[in-house]
Every structure is written in structure tokens, then in C-alpha cells.
Length: 313
Image (cartoon, rainbow, N blue to C red; front, top):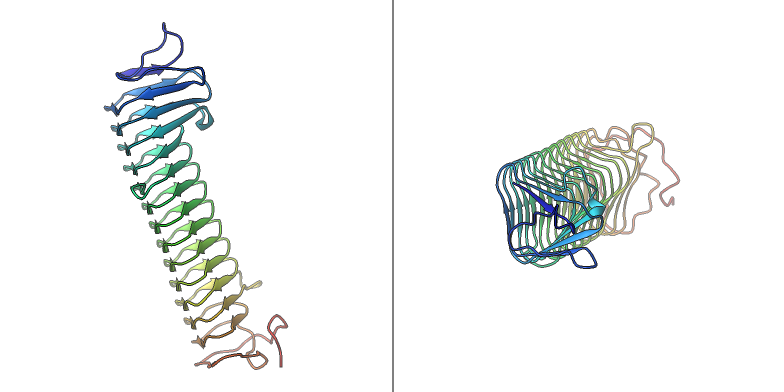
């Protein structure tokens, strides 16, 4: 069935229970259930459809296909579920959960605003805009692409393996976990939780954790600085910060910094913590560091001269 949201009564074929539009191009609906092959089309720019009930899209269903996300807002008072390979071209706002099944797509942004408002995407999903959750967690599946930022004010953020995040990842209270073989092009910032980056991943920007631990698995690249607060910082083997010709730095306010074998990094600075290093391939000399707290080195291999970036004696 093809449903058409239009002000022209000769063209309109609204879903049962829907009314509108009003002068502001708003439609009011109860719940919405599309079965496989159903479509919803919009012929008025700047429309909003408000749903009081649950929205369920079956496999291969579409809303506003071929349109622009700026042309349509879906404002929901309940949850929304996109079935396999379903797609929405709209900005989605809800007070409840958002679930994208395998291969589904949202051409637009997703925003949830209550503790029920978790966002879950399964294998192979695409979201072209930002994803934000006021209270709920955000879980991104394997082989996903998110072209905007990801923001969780209270919940955790989990990114599956082989996924690509074009924007920043920010968690105000929860932990951030990035899966193996993933790519993140914006800063990763956790105000209170831990940050974990899986193996063979790349972060093309900086990494911050104000109070939680930072853990970087083996064979991962972080192209900017790692900044830690009171939590410990640990890297696995063959981790690179920056590039071999332009290594970047690790800074820890009070945590223990432990580096795995064959890391390539620039400076390591810890003001109130302890620094441990095992077989660092390229690392500046440590003899000229000013140390404010207990400090010890284990089996370090120093290959670069001291740099002036750290305070000399």
C-alpha cells in the first residue's frame, strides 16, 4: 500500500487514524504499522508527523523515499522499529526507543529524550545524521556507518566492529567502547566513564577521559593526543599515536600509564601517577623529565633524544 500525506484531498491517502495537515503542515496519527513493501510519501515540504503510538516498519518499507530529511520530522511518543532493509528519510524524535534491524537506514538524525530512549542498530545499518540520547544508551552494531556525531548524556555508547563513525563520540556519564577494526573520525570524549578502543582500529582525532580508564588494544592507531584524568591509561602492542614521523602524546593527570611493546609515541607526561613502559620503539629520552610524583620505568628502549615539550631539570 502506498500512503500519501498531502493537503490535496484528491491525492491524499493517509494512514488510517491520521489527520491533517494543519496550517503548520502537522499531521496527527496514533500508531503506524507498515508491512513489507508499503510506502509513505510526503508531498509538502517542512512537514511533521506526530505519532502517539508505536511505529513499526516491516521489511523493505520506506518513508519519504527520494525526499530530504529536512522536509520531514517524525515526532513520536512511543518506540519506533525499522525492519530489515527498511528506510526513513526524516529526522526522528522520540521519547522512547529506536531500533534499526539488519541493513536498515535513517537518512537523517535520531534523537531520544527519556530514560526509555535507547538507540540500537543491528548489522549493516546506516544513519546519515547525528544520534543523541538524553538518558538512554546507544548501541551501534557491526558494519555500521554513522555520518554524524554520537552523543549520550547519561548512558553508555558501544560501537560494534568494522564500523565507521564520521563525527565525534561523546558520553557525559557512561562508558565508550569502540569495536575492533572500526574507524572514528572525530574526538572521543568520556566525562565520567571508561574509554576502550578495540584492536586494529583507527581514531583520526583526540581521545579524552576525565575520570575513567583508557584502554587501547593492539595494532591500533590514534592520530592525535590521548588525555587522561585520574584513570589509568593502557596500550597494547604495536599501538601508534600520530605517525612514525610525527608521533603524538599521552598526558595523564593522576593515573598509571602502561605502554605495550613496540609502541610508537611522542611524549608521555604524568603529573601524579606512575609511568610503565615495555619496549617502546620510538620514545623521547626520560632523563630530563620533571617528575612530581612516584615514577619508574621498566625495560624501556629509548631511541629518540629528549624534546623540550616536557619540563627539563
